Image (cartoon, rainbow over all chains, first blue to last red; front, side, top):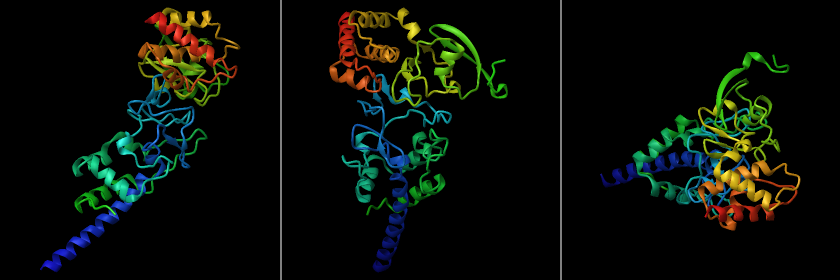
Length: 174
Length: 163
């Protein structure tokens, strides 16, 4: 009986870790991680270069007066000018950083612990399923040259389902 | 009919610019900058780069310093627009413009509309900006003549008058 429970536990953990790997693939995609920096600036582009025009984080993660996010980013994508937009456009706070100070992604285990430390299961699922800036990743608009921005590697539905599976498995981390 | 415009895609927009109601009929994708300059003939707002990198086109949109070259007119909604032409009627704008004259800031002048719009936004939020505040807030306003030192002096001069 005990060994059966152990086997079930291990199987569930394995499923949870597999679900986490799916989540991790989205979180580290440019559409997400570009605004989860550890530095005082956001990144942009699939090559995750430093945001141009001397944009900095600012005291509330929304830039500084006269050069805040809303100086360029509106409440929705501006496809004719190539500027992405969404409600309350801002950087993730430093407590949600997924990179180091050299602009390199943290390890999967570190990101996993960071995600878990901020939100419990119910709130995390709601965040992944409903937060406008999370959803923006699947509607990122067009670049200034008219091409569509790269999407995360999972669909939105797959991402939410992976989150559900990970939470069900007890949010195991690598 | 305006030559060169596809009237099929035109829409009417009602804007409040410098306290006055204005109506324009333009393509929804038209950047606010070109509505101001071409349709409303408010040419104080300048075209610099067209990609939000230089700040020459800065206006206040709903009280926020905004790069007008990047905002399609369709996304303006009911937010009020203030341009450099409206600054002389703004108490802080007037003080900043006077400081610009007193400190003889301008060289060629092309970027200065945007500089002043950003400075007024800064001083409305922060009456005692430090050098760091000034450098950070004006970090997106470029001046190819290199008037940055005089700009900083003028900002401080205006801030003293506002104290």
